[in-house]
Amino acid sequence: MDHFLYRDGVLHAEDVRVSDIAAAVGTPFYVYSTATLTRHFTLFDEALGGMDHLICFAMKSNSNLAVLKLMGELGAGIDVVSMGEYLKAKAAGLPGDRIVFSGVGKTREEMRVALEGGIRQFNVESEPELEALNAVAMSLGVKAPIALRVNPDVDAKTHAKIATGKSENKFGIPIATCRDVYRRAGQMEGIDVVGIDVHIGSQLTQLEPFELAFTKVAELTELLRADGHDIRRLDLGGGLGIPYERSNEAPPLPVEYGEVIRKTVGHLGCEIEIEPGRLISGNAGILVSSVIYLKHGEGRDFLIVDAAMNDLVRPSMYDAHHDIVPVIEPLAGAEQAPLDIVGPVCETGDTFAKARDMPPLREDDLVAFRSAGAYGAVMASEYNSRPLIPEVLVHGDQFAVIRARPTYDEMINRDTIPVWL
Ligand code: LLP
Image 1 (cartoon, rainbow, N blue to C red):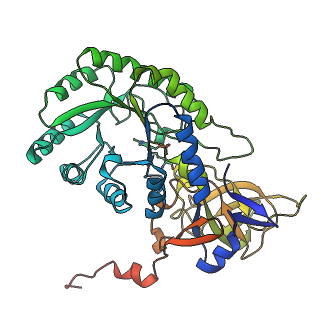
Image 2: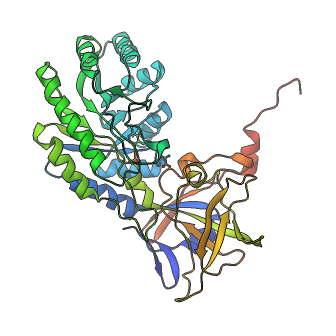
């Protein structure tokens, strides 16, 4: 459930008319709902109730400082994957001991900054990375808390570009050989082994792959403890999917996911970490856009909107579906006709939907792309020299611009022309 509902014939974000935000900030823009972000965080928190746990919001899904600040105030930790994310999490007020550093290619510089600034744990993905971290920690005279990210060779049954838990993927250390790496880690002066990490992919719509992976992690926990490691923390990653197509998708609920965690690893007495991104931020955001033109083509009609693939890349990158709805509620029984919904960018790939049944729309009408709060703004670019679009946060009947639209001058003046030209 989210807080983007029609009221008095107009789509609202909580208690604010989306059309009022459009009038104030211009289209296109992203808008997020505080109540929905809070609700989704709370669902996970309740799902893990009774177990010692920390929900580390995967900020790669939405890294606006205001969203991070909200997460921090709710008691979340943050899962970061780069120095930029680490510094943003700190800037949002997150203490280092609530920040987990994931990622397959952490540099020594990133390790140093996180060790100096405070870190809960590094999720280490390879032996070379372990050695590098050991060296950096020793040079600073500290011990780096680590979990090894194990690759459980489980098929997440999701889009190939976002599956991470198969042996052919670049992620993690094969679960079969990780005991050796743990043994080496246990002997390193700059390393403190605290746990195990696993993340098998994103937008998972079934629980079975989680269950298989977590069961393997539970077995590994016993083995590693028998080997003498003090495994006290299990990071089970993110990945729980959301319904993008509301009419026919019903992925498992956080409470059911929590049950799988309880059943598979609950008996081990470990502190549980999870790293959800999409389920917290995805349906907490929409992208609002205006119709520029309706174009009649041969055998098909195009709705050309002012948002494009540079603002929301998921449809062109993953063939992802986003529900698209008019901001003014269509009249009951309004006739629907199939439209190709496209942006202005000069690529055929700049297509949001093909032959999508839509109610009548005219130039300047507003449309909203649902489920755009995760992997929307964060993946945006300025392709075609289209400035990044603003982000707005709603809270009850208030709204605030939480990232302003840059001016054309700001965009142009970021480039510099060398002296010889
Ligand atoms: N933890 C790790 C180590 C991850 O790699 C990811 C996502 C997450 C947590 C959060 O997963 P979530 O709960 O959001 O599924 N851009 C793609 C999604 C890429 C996900 C990458 N890793 C998309 O738009 O679908």
